[in-house]
Image (cartoon, rainbow, N blue to C red; front, top):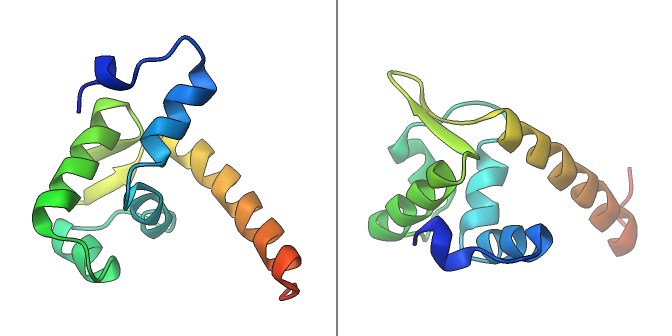
Length: 102
């Protein structure tokens, strides 16, 4: 999927389109603690096919959220880490919402 295909006049809509793609949030979540190899990511994402994982990683790389570093594997960029902080805040909110707060 090219950046042009999800381009919107509103940046929030563009990022929501990207994040709304199946498996994308899970991949970002699994990269929150540091770099992962393709195989490690696939194992952490349990049911994702290699083809879909490749597609999602390509999408995230295209948008500057994930990078591939050799030999470290896939890792979040500075923008990806900033997005990860937002996801952590969402995680804290979800725990409070579900009544499972620390």
